[in-house]
Amino acid sequence: MCSSFFPPRVTGDFSWPREWAFLEEVLCDFRGTIMVIAPPDRGKTTLVRLIVRFFLRRRKRVGWVDADPGQSQIGPPTTIGASVLLQEAGLSERLFTPFFHFIGDTTPERDVVAFALATFDLVRLVRQQGDVVVLDTCGLFHSPVGYLLKMLKIRLIEPEMVLALGEREEFLPFAAFLQDRFLPLPVPPEASKKDYLHRRDHRQKLFALYFSAGEEMRFPLAFLRFSLPWYPSFFLWEMVEEGNGVRFAGPGEEVLLVPAGGIEGERGSASRIVPVDALEGLICGLFGKDGKDLGLGIIERVFWEERMFLLWGVRCVPGKVEAVVPGTIRLTREGEERGRFSACLSPLRLERRIWRP
Image (tube, rainbow, N blue to C red; front, side, top):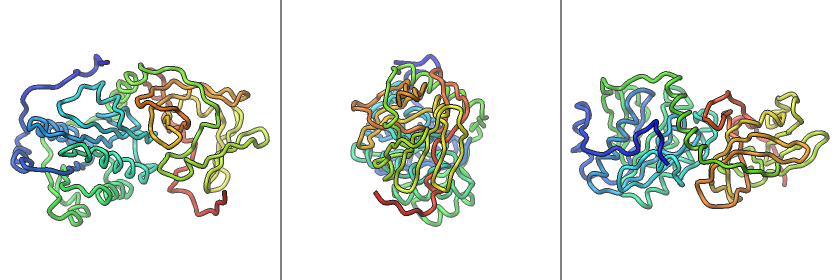
């Protein structure tokens, strides 16, 4: 399966930009994990692609982890994806990778804990199979959340080398912590700025290609989960009929689904009221009972009286779907983004609350 929007394979020789030519010697005998960090529009993805190609030309088995859910190179947007390469891979091979974790958003801001853990899990996976691991990160940077996310990844993954595109002064907390594992690189003049429309169009092409392989799937409402499997509540959500609504309760948090046209809102720090029609159009993750990622879907219709819902989904990994987690992006099968809606509170906002099974 190939897309007319992207070349199916890139081959042939390559050369480093003049500013990065010294990397040929730095990386010559490297083994381990390289993490690349930078604010947006610094040439980060270009650098990652060149590093991957450099090692492939030396017949290394390369684990490539893409932790940029808004501008994905591996896996569809809203996911973290990974691949283990012996040669350069085409778009379809990378897009439909079986190694991915659904995040549900194009930015990690809302849930940096799950994002960091998911990235670490994929790095750990490809480390077992590769000689070298190259980790591309998102552009979330000059904010407390951005710095926290990068430090969480560095602490968890313990990369042998961190390459940072920009002046050393921009990365002082990381330079101080990493010491000789930190290497700043100049930003090449060829690096181009991408506006919101460019990034959205890129995502639309990827979504459209991904969901062109979809099929209709029908599940009971009880399959819904309102947290990712990085949290204990994923495994303990219970659906209970309550008045004219349906209450989903987990450890310390709950979501009350009400009939279409109801008023959305919050009731307390760990509770959320969601009209059932607000779920329609949301991208969602498809999971096994054990929390294993199986694919992605779009919730297209909820049959309230039947307590069922219909989605258009793609399974990239064999297995029985027994849990569905709504994300925050509204989407059509053609990949067009139609706004955002969050059906659950960020776990980082939850106040301490006693829960008893």
